[in-house]
Image (cartoon, rainbow, N blue to C red):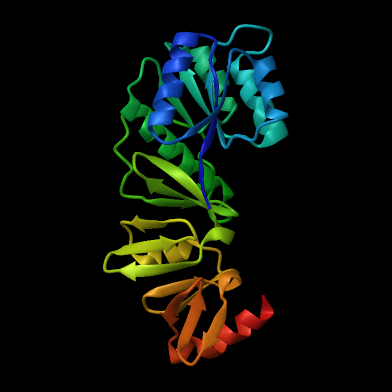
Length: 258
């Protein structure tokens, strides 16, 4: 099932916070809350489960945005993007130690927010990949090139895919199958289909091999969603997909094991 990426906004200037929330909604993200300070943000975490937090560095109160970021990372593993306006060198060095996924310089345009969030999602995927390392220090991404060439980022149990102007998350368990269409690939779920501008082999490399298998040069299936196997065909949610003879044995062995 498609789910919007959930973002918590912690910003004590309400005009800026409202503008950020508006941009996020227009980009297809879900705002779990707009909080003016660290205490409210921590209380918010008790009842909500955002995927990402946008934090103003210069929050008022005993805990600034940097201290809040550290606590959110330690207690919740929550990735953060810092919102900042003219931070001095000392503050910037402190902020780097909290290991944010990006800095976004205020004031910013919607396009800059869009790019920064996509780069942050890519960083989240790299963090969760066993073969990737977290960069030693984040950089300011406001002038980074448009990352639109990359259409999907995987975490342990989900994949973030581009949809309209933003990113949505699909749980692996909800993906039925993937079909290749020339240089594109199509992810099929019970509710919707998503066309990605990437070859299927690249997407295949991102999917967890324990749950997915290629059964034909143009089809990958979720082993947990297979309904029936007949001579040369696999049925998933009413769709009949071809099963290549060369992979049938391995496919049946893996299917019986799940």
